[in-house]
Image (cartoon, rainbow, N blue to C red):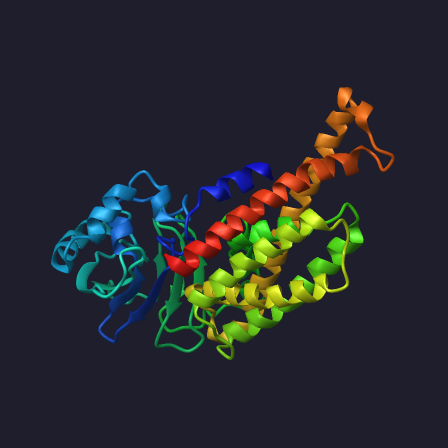
Length: 381
């Protein structure tokens, strides 16, 4: 718990070089040609960044190479993209009973993206399937991060979410491999969980701020319930496209919400009547933040509701895991204190309460400082 807070202090603006999933639309033409249209951070692949292991390209040892690539003209990047195609063919990326060699068809690199933001290019690769092919498999290489794979041009198309090193099931060329509601639900639970642990540092600090208010479980239950209800509402509305706010507004306000809950912890030892209402308001903002992440992954149109519910369940499991870890750490520290000389300073309310205040006060102060730093950075930088 404490290490998470300390690590977060060294993290700069989360959106700066954020690792986003690659999105691939797969189509098979009447002539048996497979076409893959990818939205991809091609510079991250060329730099050799391990996209499975980091949430921000700056955190990888190859960050310097990535920055050099970002400064190159589009023609140089296009020429070097052949390196990625060669690696994919050696893997191979597409199989249909045998490896399907792919070739570069087109690469469009946007030229109006701030160097501090991820640049997503449009890459098209094509390959010729063997005669009489009925199904194919996509093998996403390890280290490539997440892949959202979407079949196009057929009825009941396949839509899948692959981590680096995973392969898709056999995808029938004539369709019919659409996810069932249960499969879509289960697929998106880890996506939601991953956005909290380990990638959602701002949400982790907010949840810890709720935990640090009181030693009693009732205040925590009220706060978590208000937060969950609120972010569930705006997550759904945001995912449907009914409510949207630019990240330049949402992200600083999320940072401000972290500051508020942490600062109030320094002066309150219990739940005030207005805190659940304020938490509800902050939850609405966090829900919009979740929705923006979910938009990057995309939701299968034919299983939108199960996938949305699965993502939200994953978020809730992640939040409860943060709370459980915090509680277990405090309980462990309390047991150690009872076995040491610290037991001599026990207050009437018990060692746990003493240990809780010893951790929650400096913890809340540190969370407030981190939140204030993020707020300033997201507004002015």
